[in-house]
Length: 379
Image 1 (tube, rainbow, N blue to C red):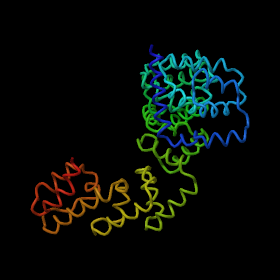
Image 2: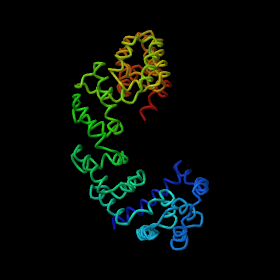
Image 3: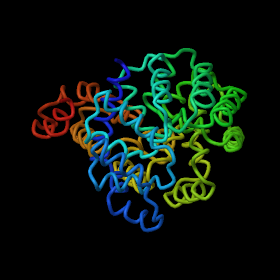
Image 4: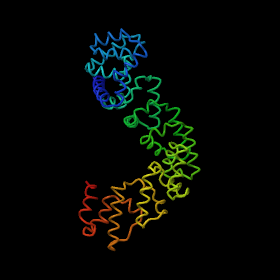
């Protein structure tokens, strides 16, 4: 019963996915007609099976049969289609599933049931399984015994439980189709040898799984670079530095440093900011220039203060920095406050900034400006 529910709902999910996704354009008649012209091979037995026994439309039957020109086992296709129909799939849903993934007709009913049961036993709900299979169709191609089960075992060895493995796969279904023994396992060991705690590595596996699946040689070189730059393994920020280095080419790194120098930052300044907050290097140089100029124009902040607070580059100019600077400017001009440090100015939460610099001075700040800048934000 559970498998029947999963398959029926999977059909519905794939139907919606095909209708909405850009991938569906690749499944259009034009796409298949091009393949027909190139292959000029339509399997008559598959075509007859789809058209006459399972009542596919002529168009869909022809398109699918053309994509399986060398198909030699129509009985297997018949078994799969009959099983899906018995599980509650409508003809329309069947057509969309087979158009989305024609090679499903090459699988056995037992294979599909077994794969679904593997994830069901891990605690996946029918909805989880639907999303997992529809977003990761390569799972149909993988051997359960030689690929899926060993990879799930590797993940369980790292994460500790089926629950945690399921938690990871709900977010990153494609992880199970990766070569974990050649990527994840050695990368975890490299990070541990650098001194990164396992707890932090597992956080990154959940938050940034692709980082743990890069080539071990790239991971090793990135760790060596982070060491050269002075990152301390005991620092929570060091693994972020390794990640940025790993995904940034040497050419892009040089372009970033050159751009910072053109803005007036020295190479030492740039490296200091990077070591304080590595993800800052993902911010566009155009925005960094705007933020820097906005802060300098106040006359209250200098380059060293900006270097010591690189997190300010991640703040919204329109929604956070500009309104706060304007309010502070008004209050200081009336001798109501002392100008705060840059760190205080941008790190205070909306609520705390409001309570400290707005609520006590409604007349000075102006009701209209307060409503526009903060009330909307707090909602």
